[in-house]
Image 1 (cartoon, helix red, strand yellow):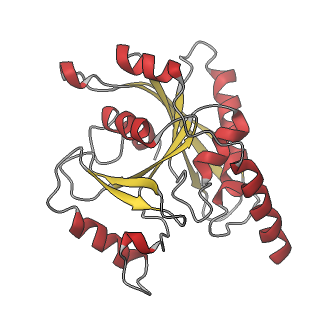
Image 2 (cartoon, rainbow, N blue to C red; image 1 turned 180 degrees about the vertical axis):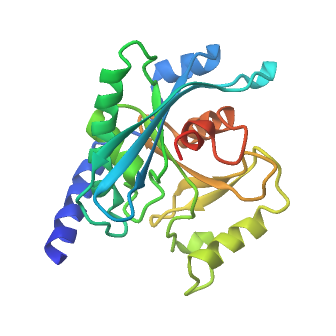
Length: 245
């Protein structure tokens, strides 16, 4: 296991050098004219065998200036096999290959479907101990823009976040929610990574006081990832991933 962890660590570090945290001009243009299509990705697992199910959606973003909500264009699910074990902070090695397989199957089954301009993945991007979570990994592997929207607060030990020493995940999440209690829909709380940089945010996407956790993956900035998330949100979980959860 130690050899696997070392190998995966080095691969993450190497792939991270290929990660681009800048916006593609085409994404900004399509956001301006309201035609941006967001692909949603999530995976669920069978409880007793290696079967898993990759859910894929395509959602057209909403337009806040005209109060136009986002529109779900298509949703589908694909069965895959997952044999790689789960190791904390290395989830990408378990989930990215099934995502790539699912995307290929989706394109084959729906050749006339709109092509996603960016993928929203139910995982983390730069909110990761090595600043290279599953959304980053997927984006670099497929060469497409990606970002992560996670339901759970990732493990963040940076002192700048102000978490009490030794606090666990639920305690940190409770503290984040307390800090956000005075905030309103659309507002956010910066979250710092291991290098003291803002690597993501806790974002209120609805009237719920429970945030989601947004971070860029590849070919997109944090600011743009946040705006896309808000323009795809009707409930707490944004539609691209809510439709396939």
